Image 1 (cartoon, helix red, strand yellow):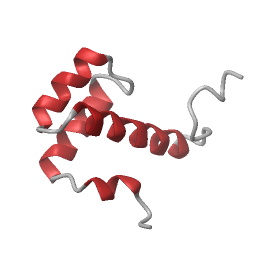
Image 2 (tube, rainbow, N blue to C red):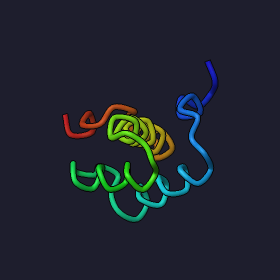
Image 3 (cartoon, helix red, strand yellow):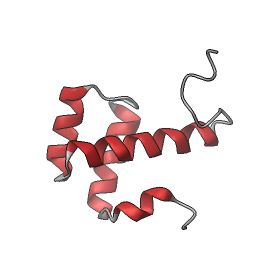
Image 4 (cartoon, rainbow, N blue to C red):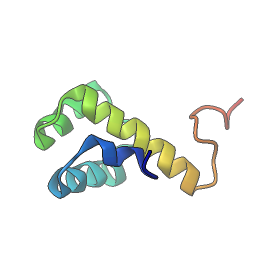
Length: 75
């Protein structure tokens, strides 16, 4: 498997740019409505968009030196 699980989603550079911008500027954990809007903007399903955010969050936490799973910091 590749080093980056997100590569398997076959997103265009434009889609990735939109997702990254939302991740950095809007929310790392978008709510249902926000997710729907981001998905529509990217031309992705909400499931695909949610999957991307899940993977991206795990990647971000690793880069921050945090556990990959959310919540474990609070345990």
